[in-house]
Length: 149
Image 1 (cartoon, rainbow, N blue to C red):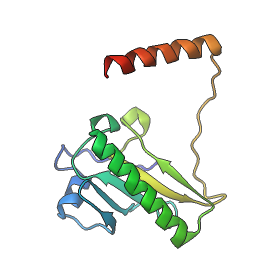
Image 2 (cartoon, helix red, strand yellow; image 1 turned 45 degrees about the horizontal axis):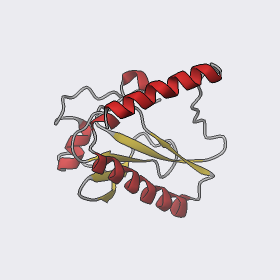
Image 3 (cartoon, rainbow, N blue to C red; image 1 turned 90 degrees about the vertical axis):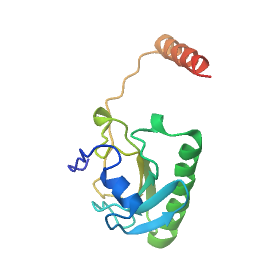
């Protein structure tokens, strides 16, 4: 994970400054709800960040329209990366909260062209809680979904 952490307040964060045009960025794409620009910490050529234009900290802070727009922009950028760089694969990565690995607290998604042996790894300890626990988790989530409907 990158070591850069932006601690700026909302509206003054580095991505808000990029959206406002206050600091330079190598922009790839922009529409009414999103902006896509090159990550200054390139992992591989074509590593792009897709951010919401409006300051939202996590995926939970996005409107449904913004969430859809970010994914549509990410899909377009991924297709462009495929055409321009011919990677072996593409990883979409999005983190929420410090514990989730988020280092810039303005919603963004990484579009990361991948190559075999590029050193990028995302691993976690696999746990197999069993069918009963999985059903209990599903029931909890179903109840939460119904409560927010």
